[in-house]
Amino acid sequence: MSQPWPVEVAPQPPMLFAVPSPLGAGVLPEERPFEGELRCRRVRRVTHDVVEVTLEPVGGGTFAFAPGQYLTLRAEIEGEPVERCYTISSPPTRPHLLTITVKRVPYGPMSGWLHDELAVGDRLWASGPMGGFSVREHPAPSYLLLSGGSGITPTLSTLRTLADLAESLDVVVVHHTRTPDDLIERAELEALALTHAGVRVVWVVDEADRSWPGNRGLMSPDQLADLVPDLREREVFCCGPAGYMRAAWAAFEALGGEPGRWHEESFALADLPVADGSADAAPAAERATGAAYRIRLQRSGRDLECAPDETVLAAAKAAGVRMPSSCTQGLCGTCKTTLVSGEVDMNHAGGIRPREVAAGKFLPCCSKPLGDIVVDI
Image 1 (cartoon, helix red, strand yellow):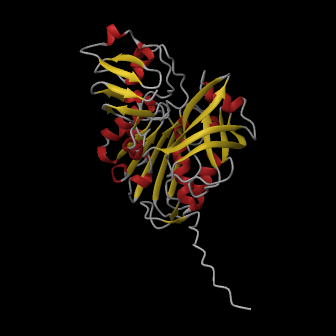
Image 2 (image 1 turned 180 degrees about the vertical axis):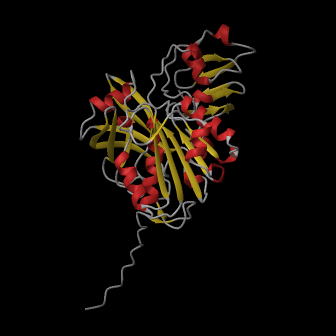
Image 3 (image 1 turned 90 degrees about the vertical axis):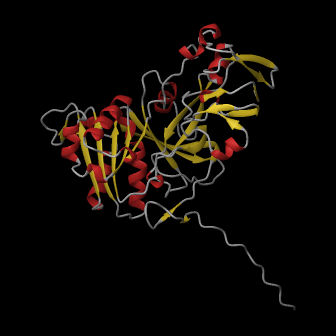
C-alpha cells in the first residue's frame, strides 16, 4: 500500500491574536466591521433605570472592536423601524458576546423597548463598531476616565479590557451621579480597584443622606483638583450629559490641563426621539441664502432643491422625502447612502469609515452639496 501524500492544512488564525497596542503588550482582537442580526441572550437589571443587554451573533461568529466604540441597533417598534447608537460596555477580550448598558430615557422608544419588551431569544439588527473614543487611539502611561450618569459605559469596557489583559496602567475613574442608588456596576468596579493596584475608582453623588461615606457635590475645579492632584499628567476621557461635560471641561481648563490630552464623547443622542418636523425642515424659501443646488434621487427620478448651507437630509425632509436617520450628527451611520455623482462637504463624527467614503458612501445628515448631486435613493 503506497504512503499517502501528507495533507497540508493552512493554520487558522487564533480568535485573539497579538497586535501592536497602545495599551501595552497584550492581546486584542483586530477591529473588524460587523453587520447583521443579533440574538438576546440575557437582560439583567443593573439599577432601577438601567439594564444590561447581552447579545450574540445569529449563526455564530465573534465581535472585534476597540474599548470605547459603539454600535447602531435597529428594531421594529410598534410597526416602525427605530435605530439608536449604544456604546459597547463589554471588553473586546470576550469576543463571543457583547453587552450594552442602557439607561431608560423618558419617551425614548428604543430604551423603553429594551427595558420592557426585549426578551431572551428576540432578535435585532446591529452594525459597527464605530468611533475613536478609545484609549487604544491615545496611548499614555496614565489615564483619567471622567463620566456622568450612563456615560460610564465606555469606562466599563475600558476597565474590563485592562483587567482581562493584566495591564499595569495607572487609571483613575471619577464618576458623578445623582444618588448612590444610581451608581452603575458599583460592586464590579470596586472589586477591580481592590484587585488591581493601578486602578482607583472615585464615586461622587449629588444627593445622599448621612449614611453615604463618599464624595458629594457637582463637578468643579476645586473638587477635581482635590480628587486628581496629578490631573495635568493624565490623558483624560470624558463622557456624559452635555452639561456635565461642559462643567468637566471648564474644571480641566481651569486647572491648566492641556487641550490635546482631553477627549470627549456625548451619549446624549443614544435614545432621544428625533422629530421629523424639526427646525431643519423649514420651508426652502426660508432656508435659502443663495442659489440652490439640485439633488436628483436616482431610483425615484425625483429632483429636490438644496441651499448651499443646508444638509442633504434637511432638504429631503423639507420636500417630504422620508430618509432613515437617527442622530442627525454624523455619528450613528443610520442615513448612510451612495453618492452617485457630484461632491459634498461632509463633516461627520465617526459614523462612516474611510473605505466606505472611498466606495462612494456618504452621510446625508452632515453633508452639504458643493454643486448638483445624484443620490441612490
